[in-house]
Amino acid sequence: MMFTTSSSSPSRGERALHKGQQTKQLIVDAALGLATQVGLEGLSIGAVAELTGMSKSGVFAHFGSREELQISVVREYDQRFSEEIFLPALQAPRGLPRVRALFANWMKRGAVEIRSGCIFISGAVEFDDRPGPVRDALVSLRENAISDSAQSSRVESTGKALDLAQRRYAAGYSGYLDVLDAQRSNNEAQLAMIATRQARLASAVELFKAIGGGWKDDARKGS
Image 1 (cartoon, rainbow, N blue to C red):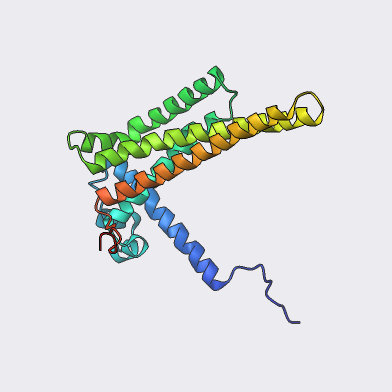
Image 2 (tube, rainbow, N blue to C red):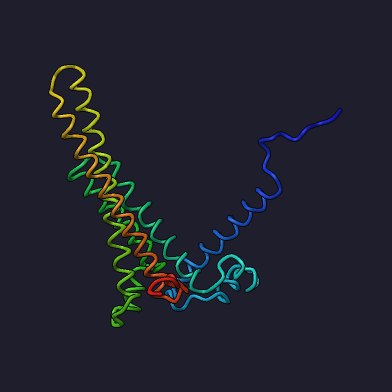
């Protein structure tokens, strides 16, 4: 009897890609844990390789440079910070319950970081007395992350208001001007969120440049 391979089965290339992603995440996890103890400047390919039991060339193959490893750590920490503190709080009702949820999440995270350390705090300590692009980029990245969460909440709330306005209009309880007003508010919220995410990306780029990530301006610029 002959068996045919299902088309849904992952190919060898897909399995290799998945394994590579898992390995890269393992490295980032280890590097994040190390960075909370020694800071971003104390992070190195060699130290992470020793921590993960990999060769330096193995770690280097996934990131290409110490700077790329550093920026990956900052992005990972920023994502986890948002997922653990801001996003869960958005599930609570607006107003005081949401503020309480945000505070509770923050305190819970703070209790953990007393033992493990915090990238943003260690970064602030490292660069607080060193005005310049790295310090500015760290501050900007955090502020934009907070603003992004707020804008996401605004988009969600105005979207619900728009849906309600459309339902009320369809039922004959209100005029179409209410629908247009709700649509305008939702459009403004979405545009603001897009602008915030663009700013957040720009902050990440500036941080990458500031820590020596090798970003090069377009050679054609000014030519």
